[in-house]
Amino acid sequence: MTHRKTTTFVMAAFALLLGILAGASTAAASTKQTMFFEAPRDLTARTSTDATRATAFAAMEKAGVKALRVNVQWYDVAPNPDDAATPAFDPTDPNGYYWGNYAAAIDAAKAKGWTVLISLAAPVPKWATADKSDNVKRPIPAEYAKFATAAAKRFGASNVLWSIWNEPNLPRYLSPQISGGKYVGAQLYRELFEAGRQGIRAGGQTTAKVLFGELAPVGGSNDGRVYPLTFLRAAFCLSSRDKYDKKCGAKLQLDGVAHHPYQFTNGKLNKNDVTYRNLSSLTKFLDKAGKAKAISTKVPVYFTEFGIQSYPDKTFGVSPQRQYEIRARVERDAYYNSRVAGFSQYLFTDDTDNGGFQTGLYYANGKAKPSYAAFISTLDAKPVKVGKRYKKVSLWGIARSATKATTVVVEKKRGKSFKTWKKVKTKSNGAFTVTDSTYKSSAQYRFRWTSPSGKVTSPAVRVYKG
Image (cartoon, rainbow, N blue to C red):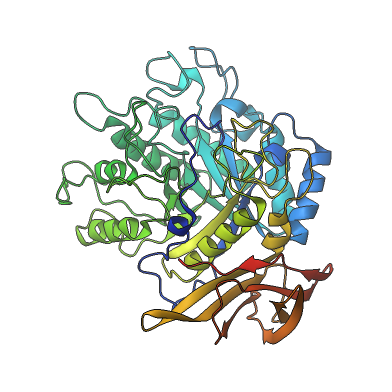
């Protein structure tokens, strides 16, 4: 997200957040799943510098990061963005834009061989809107296509994925959402997606993947937010019974659907919301849309923005230990869902105020949270039932910066200290699983291994029921 928390960011009860993703299969792990990292404060904000970028890139490389997501806001790079009159320039020529810190971050990541997901996002220049009144109301698809062409020419095809817009179901990024009882925002987004996709193709990227959605997880508040499934239903030209209306638009060819599965509230979710508590509702809906021939079948899902709010936000955040424990469980569940092609970590460094996001791995003052070490060496401990009682503990982890299969030493706390429990060989991506045949609710585990940068030990994790 590129905005302050304007909605209540209440962390759900821990057990709810740790729920297993419905439909996940332990037999079909996403071993090729891409982990995207987003670090706007450090890399692309107006206050970011070569020094902040160098520091962030070094820490991310140490943590094993190999993919970056960047929200390129059209308003930031376009000439005369507050003018109603279109400036005299070729909008398909990348030299007509000021790419600034966006280019610095993207170019640096590509030079390292990283994959980059570029989201071409709002706000937009006023001259590119139908009403010329603000920077999100009725953007003109034809103008967006030209911008997409320029971006595609500037950043090339190598190691690049694209996505269209950011959270288009929120009126702060696309308006109007509803007019005359119709979901006009969803239809406009469909037009923007088609225009953006065509623009990227016109820019020479004929085979690059273009993702649809980038949706916020919940809707229905008084500020005009639309539920994500309601938004998708309208964008896909489906009726309330999920019947495809061919008169509304042609079948959409999708490379993937991007989503932001934050958990904002511990209250009851609407059936058209999609968070980590009800991921299956998204995949089931996409399957229905595919069966109705409104979209491609078996469309992969990319979770392109996700994080856990932590202290120093004492109102909505969780403790540093709970931050990394929750995050590990959520990533584990995504790993074992074969439909999930991408996962993410939103924020490297926290926002500077408690009205923003404290989902990062570093505090705003530059000090590392325990979550940074836990990101390098991720571990989750989940109890397993045999019959009606918990009897075992299933451990899953990732030695994230591993470049090949490696050996990790899992330790278990005995008394006041940790003792070697088992040695485990990881997969080539650093992932491993091992089962403790003895269940104890107070048990704690950690693991140590030798990373490319030296010997490391994961923070201790507790056993949590999910």
